[in-house]
Image 1 (cartoon, rainbow, N blue to C red):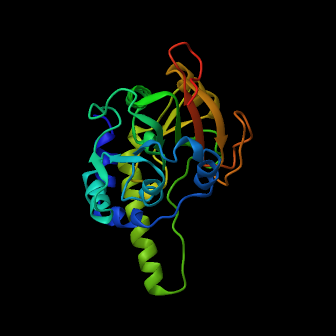
Image 2 (cartoon, one colour):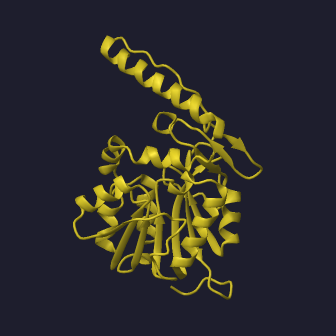
Image 3 (cartoon, rainbow, N blue to C red):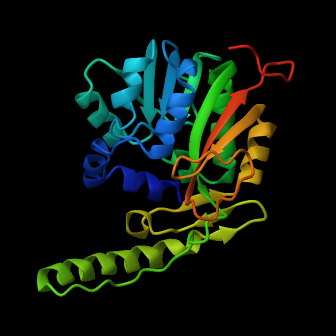
Length: 265
């Protein structure tokens, strides 16, 4: 059995939905949204993995036509209640048949949403993004970094002098250990990617990790031109900069036209 149901179940939890509601934009997101503003302002925008509306709060004001989707029904229900009147669908990136070919000028997939999928489904997602994005359109997404030197970890119990605080830490540690024991069986290392049960959400997720070079290869294979990579702190790394201190990487790519060249937006 695959692990998709485990990740989806985590994102359906009410407490997690509430936690995602008011998270701010990340530094790297601010950097590339400023730099590439002409690519989405007054354009047709698709926001994939919108969650409870973290990016919706900003992107809906700038786009001419804003659409957001998430595969967690709990997330999309919350997002629709929070932003009345927006076009928000419970939809999976692997099947975006609700949208026409080349419907959007700009596609955003923030917060490492693509990493919730296994390798084959990841490629399906990229193919669907390519289909709904116009020639010359921009695709920006984030992904876990296989080169990050702390990408693997084991649960560790932290200590506190206050008894109540210590009780909470012990309780959380037990949950981490229980999740780690259950989910570590899904881990594997392939030549070009790894599947890791990392510490996110108390070790409740199974996550795809990839390095810059391999991610660039995946993009080129799907007719995207990699343009830029940002680290967690918002520094542009070009395409092959030093990234061992950044757990996430943010990729900017342009969809090539039918002639293999980037169409003029």
